[in-house]
Length: 331
Image (cartoon, rainbow, N blue to C red; front, side):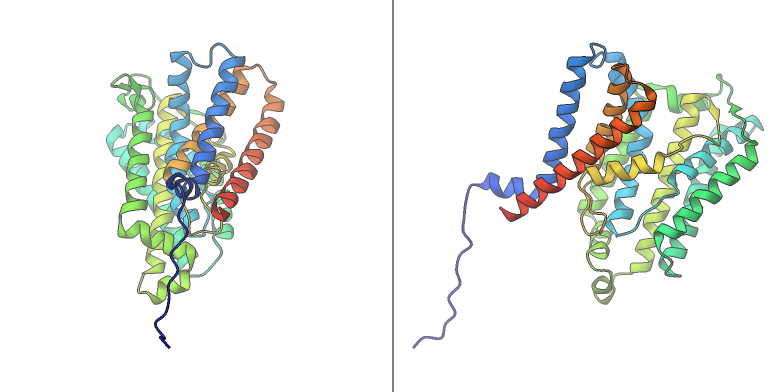
């Protein structure tokens, strides 16, 4: 009697079933994004106007920039609650520096270095000291916002409109707002790094099983610190863009910004438990949040009611996204 093992072939079916199963969450958020666009375009005639769409791209750029970096953090199983406060601190400091006569290229470089240092310190506490990321970055949220308030005393710091710095937030390139160009570059770089580099594979492996990644020879601590440095730099860049667009720096900038960033990442299909992330999904999630906010304003919904509607829509989208993903995996 033969003892040769018999291997059964995997049942085959239409290729699009496998495609839908692999990309269920990205496809679902893309469908929801298109649904919001159609809904608001039907209810508000100005939504699809060129001026409004370009303004939407300009305003959503800081959210996309930080959400791309946050995707790396959440994919490792971490979280960064301090990005809004980092935006506020950089927003205020760059205005103070420019008002003091610091050349704008030097001021921009200094702010990016500051963002990296903020991420480095927080990443060190998370990776080396083993303190939960939620606690470390919650403390950072309070400390950084407090420093910004202390420096500005609660006042807005104006930036001269003739300073070339403001073109970072108000300029145009190839017919598109310059902040949107920055966001596209960050998105492309993030997608390339996460999907096609060793660092991106390490990020995913750490989120899936940090101990297994460590035993496989991956420098878990170094990679963990690096992703927090990325969010620090991204938050600093967002703070610069917002200051340039508004022509002023304020410690009250980006209040609640970290919640929009996390919502965008989760809407896009990145698992809060780590091990799975999508840059394309994150960008669609960020655009969805921006479209909802813009559309509700154009629909003349009360600003006191807008946050309630936005929260309910995001909750429904995430719930549907999760159901679709689970259904796709089962199929």
